[in-house]
Image (cartoon, rainbow, N blue to C red; front, side):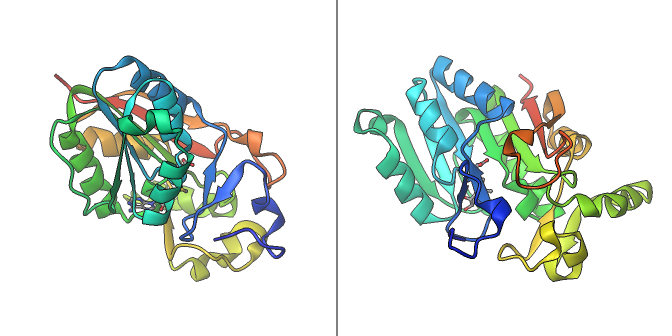
Length: 249
Ligand SMILES: C[S@@+](CC[C@H](N)C(=O)[O-])C[C@H]1O[C@@H](n2cnc3c(N)ncnc32)[C@H](O)[C@@H]1O
């Protein structure tokens, strides 16, 4: 997705950089979970992992903080942009890996922290669970996992009644929208979307269950207020959800 004269008004926000593969946007304004990851990356001796790094907003900040970072994305064009944007003096602490969750393979017990921001909502339920189980294995004992995902309370807010009804019926993945064309009445601006074939919207409760089922201990789970993106639609302070969890040991 690239910005053109026809790009919908709400996606022309100066802090939203469109991905090259229709997986939404990279936000240039970091949230509390990315900030925590970056600060931790700067203090720990070991390697940290940024999965779904896009153009490297968190990766480059973590390198600038003094960290050693492995940046992962399914799109090699995004990784090429990360390398290009990384100051030369920091490049020896940057490793790039092209790969796609949940098939991605990385060394076990190799990372002090993992950030996976606004990626999991592009996966179905079993792929989310399989991906987070892998993240558990990639972390060192005591390592930290930071997950951030889109919720039904931001641009998809017309889905809220369905999300609530599905949850009340015990649906394991109440935010799963397969075939976005079936959900156009719930899409932002009620119009066609150039984007992924489905979304799996999450919230702090779902992120907590995903981490706990994978064997992690959840330290913090909360909504993230993205009303800093004023002008892209109605916001209520629950636009994203985040979790920080730790691998026991
Ligand atoms: C919405 S952007 C998020 C960028 C950034 N992490 C942020 O929070 O703003 C999603 C990024 O994840 C990548 N991505 C999407 N699905 C992925 C998958 N299954 N495995 C690895 N990367 C994926 C996309 O190529 C894109 O760069």
